[in-house]
Length: 187
Image 1 (cartoon, rainbow, N blue to C red):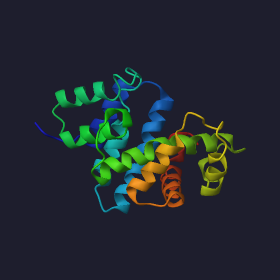
Image 2: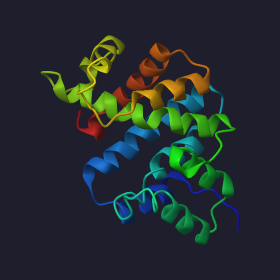
Image 3: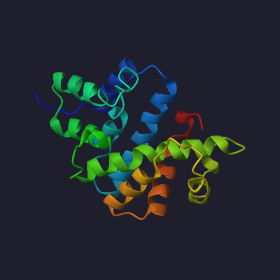
């Protein structure tokens, strides 16, 4: 079997593997960003959204570089899902060595780290709302290396470059996508 899960299947997989609400919120944020980019590139938002939902689904159970995302991909392969999905999930993490040779793979890599930075910026706003986050506020915090120190700005820059999109436009696209699901993210 060589199939692609629909959104409902993907959400069931996510919910059965991941109990941590904040990790799930990250998956939803990446899903929203992937859907926005699918629309931008004339691709299938459902399909790209599933990649966003599932890119980290094994992380709670298998948080090490040796296991994540390999264990999750192994599970998806056993379930008969297609190689394209597994390759895209592998592409989000540099340590897998997966070549980012499609726009889908470049996108998942480009948006993953950025969603975390945007959430961090929202959380330090007085309102703690995504509605109050804009490119300027993200760029201002970007320069503070101690702010959201776990977010690799180099990965975000490389991701935008690989997509052929200017960094400011990239940040704006992802902010707007996340603002569209701000209630789901609790922000």
